[in-house]
Length: 488
Image (cartoon, rainbow, N blue to C red; front, side):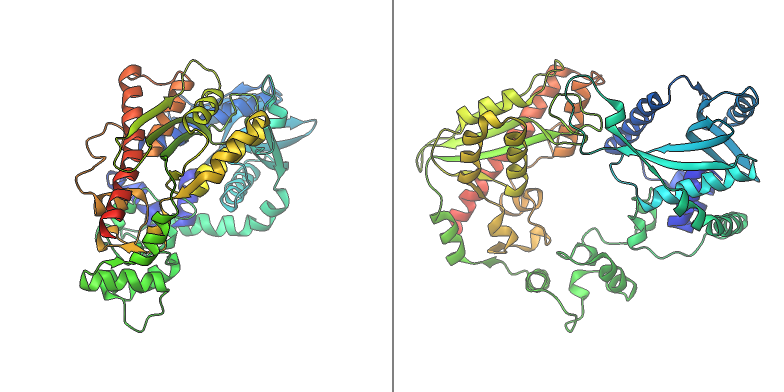
């Protein structure tokens, strides 16, 4: 039992069992998940510089820890002060400590996480390490979680001592030691059984992490189910499902619902469409020409690469803008995609955006809170452009609002007001399916890989694909507004 499988058991014993005996049922790793793992490795290696000069006993493969255990034992005997990936095993339970440090006659352990907060699952992780090391004769004086400091703003060379925060969790770990022993005994019983544990699906399938057996365990859940009811609490959806309510149309008539949920359920039952013409007219009547349809793309990095950047700060690198001077006039398309030569993409983004958005007219965005937050961060980091960027914020109108407030709703939207659901419901002739890049997460990840020189695809072709994706986002907004005009 490794540290990762132990944590899997804490979340769900069925996942623990399937991981041991039915690995073939695992969901395939997505590119986004692979990027997260890669990012975690990068952060872990960088954190080693907090305690330089150590010996690295990382195994060549995940399945060959016996050599690492021997090297760890030898390093301790030889009096090594710092050991990276120190490996220990006790009664079939294996763990590797990211950084093990000898402090005179005692030891301290450091577990590195690529998050900015110490989470409960990190405490579980450290508790197992403390237990195994103790059973192996290594009594830890302290054990800490190393996380990224989201208050750190890079200025010049990277300062890793300010980039990372170290938080001792020794007191919380002590409290959990009896639970660790009970869990190990319980999990060994689970793994010695010939039967797959009978675990019901629900909240634990995604918390604290999305389980990689969810595709198998949820295979009988309809694609559009009670779990897709707008703003339903996870526990509530879980309870309804286990009462036999799988479809939204199965929800009992006496079940308490919000006004928005009532609309969704009713439209699903009878196929009706909600069109509140009065509210839609008021919305469109507030728009002033020239009209701008604007969409941003951003990327983020665990380790800041540029001055005036924090860990995981959203960095805008691209926008698409469709412009219409007057009604019935043709649309002009403008776009910016930052270079990937290693420079900060924000300055080009700011200067071009200010120029392209002019000084008057409504700027339509989809999910205004996101664009507003990004622009406010740019104002904070580049105060010389505050007046121009603030003017853009003040002119922004959220095209999502009519769908979020259900002034316009069709069953095809499936309770969602995201543009990925609204567009096919209103304009089925438009689709992202034929694009090489089909969603913002992919765009963000690919641009980050280009910046870090880790991208191994065709750069010119992929830059074109990035532009085509972002362009469709703003053209979709154009066609959605056209549809609103049609129905009123």
